[in-house]
Length: 277
Image (tube, rainbow, N blue to C red):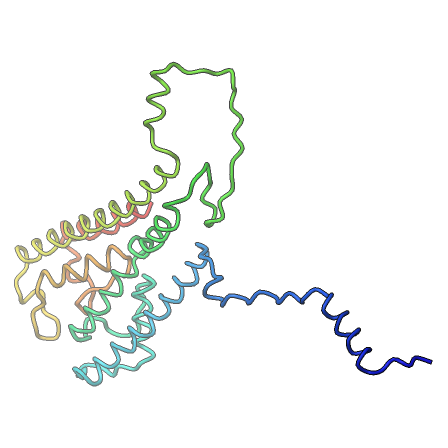
């Protein structure tokens, strides 16, 4: 029979517990925004979300303009139609359920801004900016595979020797990382420059042609004369982005016999295809 008192048993129990190792607490998990790592495939989701938002918000803005800011007196403008037209401009479709020429100037300019911002050449610039930013400090012979680069094995012949002059020239050459970064920067400079050159050249050429070959009476829409350079702005923006919209309800039908003007408009579309390639 154990005659030990409760105090001795308590002391032994506490001694055993003191010899045990303290439990290690599991590290606290970081919040998801700190654990997040950018992948270039995420740009696709951001890209699509922005396009959807542009079509929806652009349609809402045109609906408000045509019904409340400057009520349209030529036609009934419903939100479903303005949403469709705005989305068509964003996606470069050219399909419309409203007479674009009978929209107010504010709505037309807004739709043209959406068209320019969502063009294939311009909308790719953010991806290049992200590429240049995230790959600026990468080192080693890495391949740009969705920012999860892997190394390429390179077996060099140790017996191969170069002259001192060749070694000096090789050491002056840029590294693979520097070449890649410079390529991104070059694209970021050349793409906007090319687009602006085409836009400006087409805008001035078409505007000057209309101003010198047509009177204000020939350029009328709903009893008011359309400024030739404003018409050129719309034709250039939509022609380069393959929307095909004009500030006249009959499109380009009134210029069907003007070979020079038609060649200019066709050249804008052709330049778009060349710049995209």
